[in-house]
Image 1 (cartoon, one colour):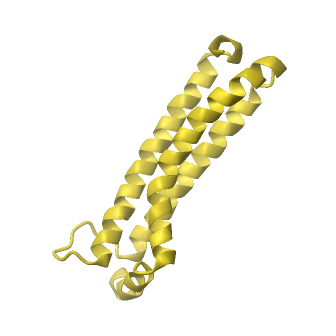
Image 2 (cartoon, rainbow, N blue to C red; image 1 turned 180 degrees about the vertical axis):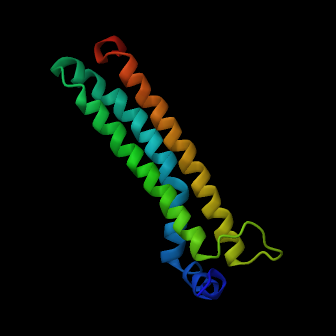
Length: 131
């Protein structure tokens, strides 16, 4: 079966809360993970400096990066469920779903890049230098 035969079932899925929830998570989890990463780096910095255990800051970055990547993969799966198109002539549920899924992939990719850049600062500067 090709993706176009699955599109009517996908439209039904995205007209109710389970599909709308996955679209929302795919769009919002990446930026939330980037913001949580930044805040957790600030919160754990003093503890890491006092205890001499820099691995804690790396664990925070890895977990947040995995959340951002998972959000992008969730958005990609939603995009695949509605046919992987980019254009539509009518404003229907499948058009909205494609737009939000593509937006979710883009935002998640940018959020993952931001998390990696914040993580680089953890490598470059020691925890007691930042405090």
